[in-house]
Image 1 (tube, helix red, strand yellow):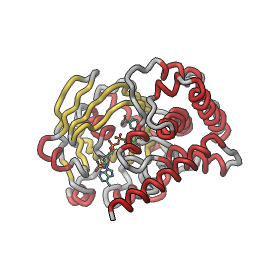
Image 2 (cartoon, rainbow, N blue to C red; image 1 turned 30 degrees about the horizontal axis):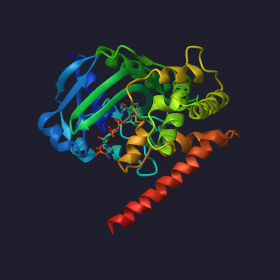
Image 3 (tube, rainbow, N blue to C red; image 1 turned 90 degrees about the vertical axis):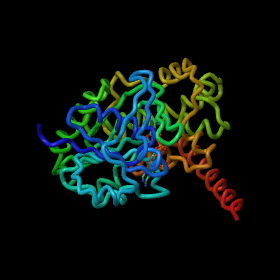
Amino acid sequence: MSSPIEVLIFGAGAVGAFYGSRLAQAPNVKVSCVCRSNYKAVASNGFSVSSPQYGDYKWKPTRVFANPKEAEASGVKWEYIVVSTKALPDVSDDSKQLEGLVHDKTAVVLIQNGLGVEDAYAKRFPSASILSAVTVVSAAQEQHGEIKHNRWTRINIGPYLPDSASLNSSDAEQRNNKFAQLLQQGGVKDAEAYTHAKLQLVRWHKLAINASMNPSSVLSNGSTNAEMAKDDELSRHLAGVMAEILTTAPKIIGHDFPPEFASADKLLASTRKNTSGSRPSMWLDWEAGKKMELEVILGNPIRIAREKGYEMPRLQTLYALLKMAQTNRDKQQAKAKL
Ligand SMILES: NC(=O)c1ccc[n+]([C@@H]2O[C@H](COP(=O)([O-])OP(=O)(O)OC[C@H]3O[C@@H](n4cnc5c(N)ncnc54)[C@H](OP(=O)(O)O)[C@@H]3O)[C@@H](O)[C@H]2O)c1
């Protein structure tokens, strides 16, 4: 048998541990993790995953590291490094953490929401392949090491090749196809490999959901997705934000959305039917006093559009208000600690 495919998960929370546990089911794949606050629990007991689709199972990663330096010291040549931290470029540049782990045969796979998450990795590791992944999944780490998969497994992956003359594009495409195949072999049947352009359209399309629902839930004091979509004024607002994104993105990318991508009306209609009572992750972060993914979900799209000469006033309003709300909350938290 050929040598195993070594995969490292950096940021083994809800999404990282869930997809790590699926990749580990593919033949000849070894999956290791860099953990942080869940290190002790995972090093002792591995992960417990509960899923309506895959049942309840235990997953022990091949190796569990307390930090990236330990992963480097292991001497393993990682074929894939999956980054599934929250994307918080205003807090830390996580690409720096991977120095010493990435070599020219490594593919860095970013499974994160938002736009512009790839840039720091592409700049820091110009000879590695950068793969960009968007997932529609609902998962949470309820206790350290306990992953609850609630719904959905859709994941699209595309090579990140913003420069059409990229030197290593065929390596990136090959690694991209193989990664999608490994997920499928791990039971994720709707994992699909896309081109760079199509994947970026998927990022913008997912943004239409995230950039409307997430900030609006925080600004309306914790509304559920369905409550917002059912409220007359709020649903007009959500539709307006979605329309702004869905009309601006094709102008920036130079391609229309394929017809199979849902319209704003369809997205809202399916949200109205969602009876799970779920709230967007930005609300959960806000409620827990944590930093929100504001820059990748609001700030970057606005800046990317502005560079091309387009303004997105609805998004800009949400960004300006929430950024200041977060700054004020952080000041209050810091004062309370004195
Ligand atoms: N959860 C979902 O259903 C879902 C769905 C679609 C997309 N997403 C996106 O997927 C991404 C990951 O979200 P998530 O829900 O999986 O977040 P999460 O549960 O908070 O997991 C992130 C993990 O990364 C770890 N981490 C952060 N910085 C680290 C570092 N320097 N070293 C080691 N570990 C580090 C965190 O550790 P600590 O616990 O110590 O902070 C945490 O375990 C986000 O961009 C999110 O928007 C999530």
